[in-house]
Amino acid sequence: MATDCKHCPLRRKDLFAPMTAEDVASMQRFKVGELVVDAGTPILMEGSNSPQLFTALHGMGLRYRHLENGERQVISFVFPGDFLGLQAGVMGEMGHSVEATTKMTLCVFDRRELWTYIKADPERGFELAWLAAVEEHFLGETLTTVGQRTAMQAVAWALIRIYLRLEASGSDGGGQFRFPFKQRDLADALGLSLVHTNKTIAQLKSRQLIGWEGDLVQIPDLEALAEVGLTTLNRPKTRPIM
Image 1: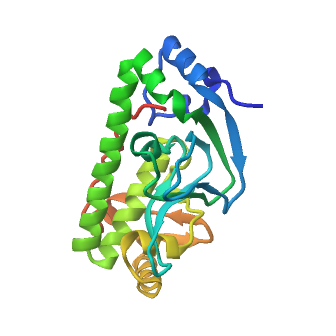
Image 2: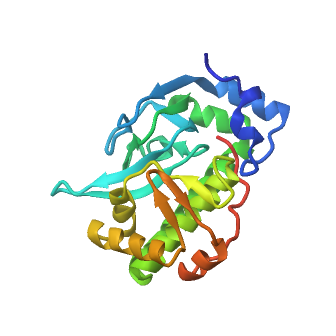
C-alpha cells in the first residue's frame, strides 16, 4: 500500500524541513501513487518526456549521461528524499538518465499537475528553485573536484560528502555508511580511471583513513579524511520534501 504523506518516513529525518498540516494535505493530493523498482531498472531516460515526477522514498540510484561512443558519465548519486524528473517538468525532456542501484520505492506525481500544484502554493515553487540551486552548487563543487583535486583528495571529498548526506537523512552514521554502488560508479563520477580509483582507495585504507569491505565504508576519523579531501564537516542544509 502507498505511504500516506502524514506518515512519510522522510519527515522524521533531520535533513528535511518540517511540513505544516496544510503542506502535507497538499502533497497528498499531488501524489498519485508509489512505484517499487528492482536494482538496475531505468527510472527516467535521457531525452525522454516523462509524464511522471518522482521522490525517492527508499533506496539509492544513479544519475548519468551517455556519450556518442557509448561511454557513461555519472552525474551524481540518488539518495532518499531526492526529487527526480524536474528537468523534464521544466524543459520538456530529460538531460540525463536515472537508474535504480538498489531496490527503490518512489513517490509518483503527475507532471501535468506540477504548475497547478505550485500556483496553489507558490512557496513550493520557491522550494523547487531552491532544490535546483542546491543541485547546481553540488555540480559546481564536483567540477572543481574533477579539475583541481588530486585523486586522493577527490575520493576523500566524495566519501565525506556522501557520508554527511546519508547521516543527515538518517540512513547511516557512527562513522560508517552503506555504499551499494560499484567503485566504477565512483570513478566515473570523479573523472578517474577505475585502476586509479582502486589504487587510491587502497592507499586510503593503508593509511587507515577508511575501511571498505563489501558495501560498508567506515571512516574512523572524519576530520582527518575531510582534511585530505580539502573539505569541511558542515552538515547539509535542511531541505524541503517534494
